[in-house]
Image (tube, rainbow, N blue to C red; front, side):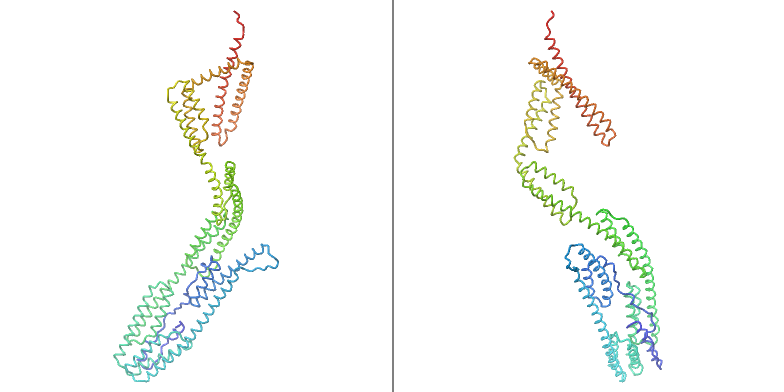
Length: 629
């Protein structure tokens, strides 16, 4: 029964006798707090629709068909508005793309998702039809209920006209039970029906002689039930849902009103207890509603703070995918926090959401433009990598190992310089490029398998020579013999072919270390031997035909070399002073010093050769002069 009907029915019927008046007060529900659940409807947060596609919006709309028609209609209006906004936006974007393409003059634009309009309209028609059917069903049910209650009144009127028996009492109870079970009625008939029903009930209990014990027992049962209803109302204080609380409170008031009379002395106390419990629940829940309104104001402040953060995030445009990703996460976090905050005052709801969502949409629109441009660049990178793939495909079967390997390495270097490609092509293009490169280098490795075996043998030979040098450096061999062994080992070393490249530096360093150890140990003897050999060499030259002229020419050449080397040292020293302020000065100065020391050693060797030549020339000049004695 509606709030208005319940209030109208609370008017007590006047009776002539005191007993009738007592029963009338008991059977009528007196003035109760006005309770309405219309304002406590199921809410539907439109923010969940924000990022949904047209197809997802259709699915949400379809799910409304299982809800009550009124609820479905209210929520569908929100979905329908969001659907047409997104539909028109995507249609405009597709039309802009259509205009940019080169199409025939007769080609007409057709939106690819136009068929979805028929689906959304179909759902709308189903909801409208459900509303109509629901309304027709309720009206039909009201008419049926009216006829049923009229029949019950006829039966009750017949019983009232008869003598009271145990059978008629039971039949009246059955009528009361059936009367309570029948709920909705045409509004205009409610009061008339209730007045007649109440009058007949009172006549039955007051105007007929009945068994006092049974009558009192029935009133006691009614009292017990009203006491139970009072306890149930008190229990609503613990009900968390405001909406359910008021629905149940209305239900208990309806049941209280439809419960039969109680003993006269208990009529007023039980009603006062029931009313007091109802008032307490109403007052307590009203305070909660006020607190919720205050919370809405606090929620508005929180959402305004999130709006300010959104404006700050949007104020500086991102410049890289990483920055866009970070800002996107910030917006997602803001949106997640937004959804956690409860409702705001109705007067501010639309404004704060439109501002927040507007900033969010602006951000993601700019992000879309950025990544569209980025995708264009990635497509260009894809074309460049496809070109390199074609090049290595042509080269992969070549057997010109050296030249082709250099080209392959050069192409690989170019590949690394090219930026990323679209994700869906990344693995595919890389696997294709890698497969061609691997094909060539695998073939090259197979072809060089014999060469590798030979290089391994050469490695063993050179390691054996290093061992011989190490043994020679630690032995007490005669200087001349050690020098001859060293020369023999050097000759053998030079005669050995290539070794594996990965061992090249290690083996050469070990050889140089061992060789230098031998030279260091026998340096003086070797230098003396070199000088002796050099003197013998120049003596042989001067004793040959035109020997003096050849030796003098060699002398001049050596002097020119010494002069040139001194000039080179002077130039290096000038460069050292010039580069002293450079960031890499330490490394460069060290290299200059090493070169100067190496050049000075070369000059020392040339000076020794020059001294030997001069000595040979002097000896020869003395030998050619006549003996004065």
